[in-house]
Image (tube, rainbow, N blue to C red; front, side, top):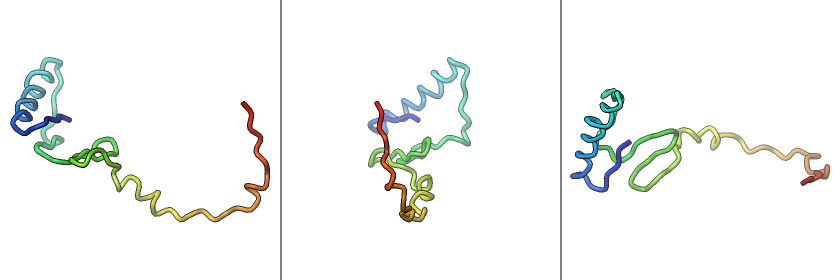
Length: 84
């Protein structure tokens, strides 16, 4: 992921990374797996964009759709011993 404050600098940063830094370390990028000039991107379950870092809603949809558990009598009836 390459971030720049303005579009004019961004092209130079991309060229620097792809031409010099990756090649110098014998690393290569697959063009078909790259996305250029995008405002938002998914990365490790998060969405990076102009509004900042947000959770990917598709990753937490299962939690949202889960039914609320019903109370279980007896769970709170037993005291819990706390040791330090």
